Length: 279
Image 1 (tube, rainbow, N blue to C red):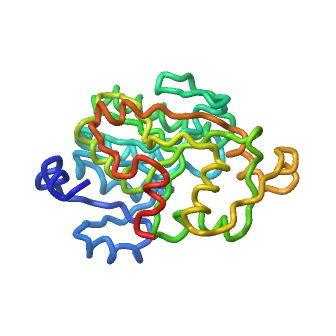
Image 2 (image 1 turned 30 degrees about the vertical axis):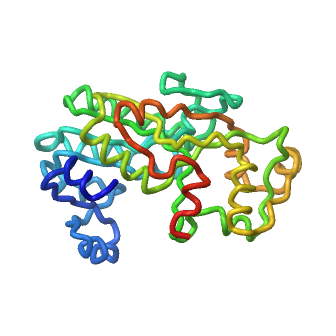
């Protein structure tokens, strides 16, 4: 989002960030962001958040184990200790849909989480929506696919290409979805001010690429060799479970709500345009 657009959307907004590690606070303060110490894994540390924010962006992932999301529950309880915020944006994941066999899906698609990680996200979504209804808070849930961020450590496929990590052969490959980190940030801000109550939106760009094609594209842009192609059976023998989980789900995300309701104009509508940015 340009500075003019940001000022028009959020006039005289004071930004406050919850910081678990105090070492990160100086960098945020240098950007004009106030900081408050707190840890979502320690509910008592969140009490000072109560009544401070009128608009909240919650992007922290659930804990790495279990079926629920104690972090989201702790945050929502703290926000209700005093006056509830007017709006809350929660960053979920496209993984809540499970495998869709490559179908183009919109936000009405039934949820079918197939991993513990995705089930925790479904639980968090349910908590957030219940919070919105009970406290009359305008809640937006952004279902987010793969995030990339050129110019940031680990933000692009470059390291994976240099390692020579394989991808699936085309006839067994899966469709994946992507969003540039800057476009995702703009979507979060717009949802704070333009999101409809208790609304789900796909925070995805316009790309419709299979996973292997995405890495082939990145290899061409970076002048690197394309990744080797293997069968799914070979992948099960060679790759860790986390990588295999992403190779087992195929879907294409319809992002029309993002563009019509939030009126977001994607700065990087395709992975090709985004991967070249700031490299």
